[in-house]
Image 1 (tube, rainbow, N blue to C red):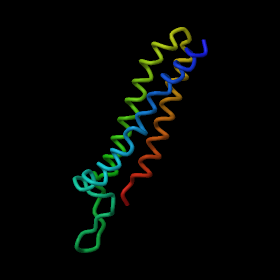
Image 2 (image 1 turned 45 degrees about the horizontal axis):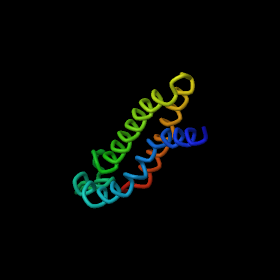
Image 3 (image 1 turned 180 degrees about the horizontal axis):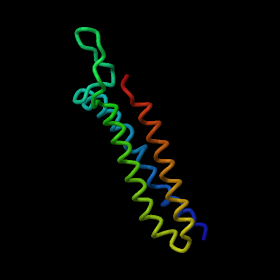
Length: 117
């Protein structure tokens, strides 16, 4: 009973591990390539000193990337909940909602950490 509970808990938490696994590689890719391809989030100014409208930059790409990872975590959580939390539908819904909220909070934090100003 104890082993099964520990194993199930580990499996239920496992989708969140995508974030720490991808953090360092993405941080490196972001600083080495993505910011060079899309430019930093620094304000652009033309030759007359007027600010140019916002454009797609590395900050937007970072946000979309981590949002995609949040969606993946949520989808993986749905499949895991179908397998482990079969009987209680309210527990499945609660688990999926908690995983979504946690993944979105991590996404917001990672975007803040990796923002180019």
